[in-house]
Image (cartoon, rainbow, N blue to C red; front, side, top):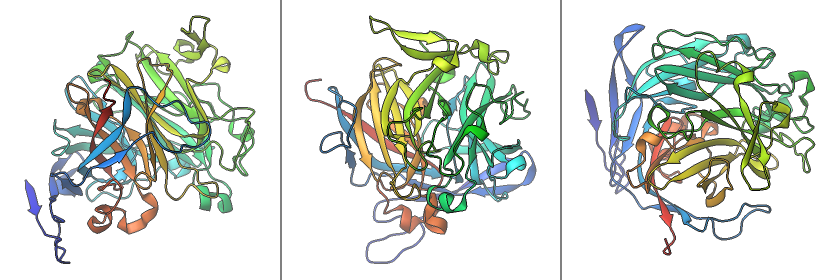
Length: 456
């Protein structure tokens, strides 16, 4: 049942809900598997568009910026949005049953205790099913949590999540922040490796743990004691950091070869221009790619993976099984970070979302995100929109393929935002004034259109 609370913000009077033209909805959830009582999920929905917010790739760009797309000239957010839960790290995967399934963490759903992935050997991560076909009318169901040790790292967070042929593959990676004076400015300033993938064959009711651990991860990344734990500035660095599966649509229907592809962010070793917190959860230099035929037997076996390692004289991608030969599919020194890729069948384009959270003296303030496009999975990638102060602190951007229009021109961007805003990060008055409006610390969904040049 939906309990609507409608208010008007026009002459300085705030009642829960509408500011001038919007509607807020508080949704009551059905029973949880672990609790016979009904729980309330914090939900906020703006059903009618406000003034659109436009981001382009024109104007002055930072040094070393990628070439601007000839086909696309920017993106326009309509102002329609929906926020669900008070948790972040949402990466929905579209399963064959029609539902989305996603990890989440560092927050709450309903009245449950706070879930936190920064608890060392007791690190928690969450999972949930997302039901519904309309981004403005979704239901979060069958949520739960898991515990897996982050040791020797302090944090173990969700990353690549994939539902394929009824199997849910759920990845986690390590993070660290041992020096308090650095972590106060940069948070998780040391990026650790992908641990591996746990899996479920009953949509999350039961889980099988990965055979890997944070100190014996899936890929041959550098060990924790080889990382610069003091400043996160000196190499060597992680390559396939916080990797995410390319979203190929429902049950991976648009994979070019039936394989699952992973993209992760990393840093150059040696780095031409290293900086404090050079390769963190939200900073890096490059994007790397791996691929595997998804199966329970393959997903945790490094010998089954191939890694992009450059192009031949004809420009065709080269793949190797030697992780040490991995090379980036995209680079922008000191401007990379969290990366996701989704395929848009209507436009026959891949769209890449990247967030760079580095502000020279901190990564705890406003972030810059940008969107790239390519007609090939390995690039070259062209800049579609450069979004400075987006959110203004939006992160974990991804484009759920389920919410892409048939012609491909209208999409929904999923992200979380403004975790440094404390208690007001989900306050309606604050969220209404973000840019774009509606950016909250939640499963935050925002409608946007990609703008094509007139010549197209």
